[in-house]
Image 1 (cartoon, one colour):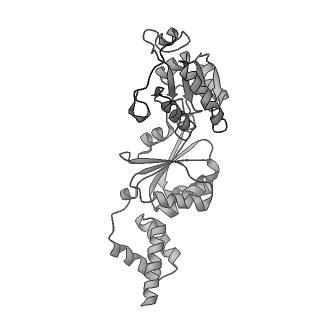
Image 2 (cartoon, helix red, strand yellow):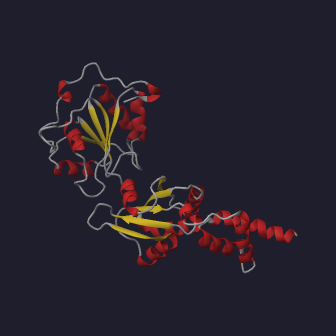
Image 3 (spheres, rainbow, N blue to C red):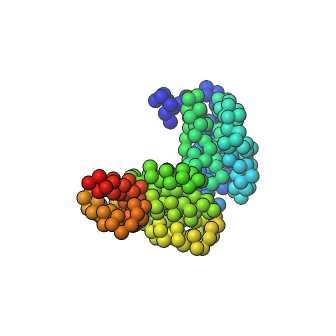
Length: 317
């Protein structure tokens, strides 16, 4: 695999022979054809809920790794125990990353196999690891991804919203003003938007999405791959109202929001202005923007700004 700057990643001159052998007998993969691995950093996807959603290749790698760098060693050890794998683990997370990175890179330089895992899903997707991968590549050491479970991809595959273009936006800011500002920046993107959100902020976030993104189709995917997996569909307004009344749900949550282009027929500016002027004749700028956003799916902030221009223009006349 190519390293940073286009150079080929080099392999240490002295490679422990056992690292080129097949996986140990602890690996539960097919005994007739078990993957072998060379030294380097391996980014290993782990289950997002259902513990059996891990690939045979990942199990082979974890069985022969010299060390597994974990977001939380307690979580990873449960997975290893379930599959009969005994491998040393070390914690690697946001709070100790600066201290641990040099140690992991030193082990890699000695020709070891280092696995990086998160508590659930694919590392680096809203999880620690980006700086480690960058540093390892800069050290001219091979980095290999072992793909597998990913909450954003699982949600996209089953939500029934457009998948030809999508943007993973991770977690929105926790404060209302910052969250709405972030949503305004995303409003013009013609792609399905994918967010992570915590249960306590779900209703508020959906309400802010409805206000800033307009009346779009959306889905709230909860507890993916687990026993109580749930998918709820509707407009952003409908979902915000539901969770506002029902209260906070349990579990991990992914929100998907369809692109605006899928919800509305494009309008010319004079048509938008006519709708705004009509509503301005009945009430305030804020109300006019809200009503037209709900009718058209256009961003409320853009409509609000345009409504002010139209209102002030009438005053100047």
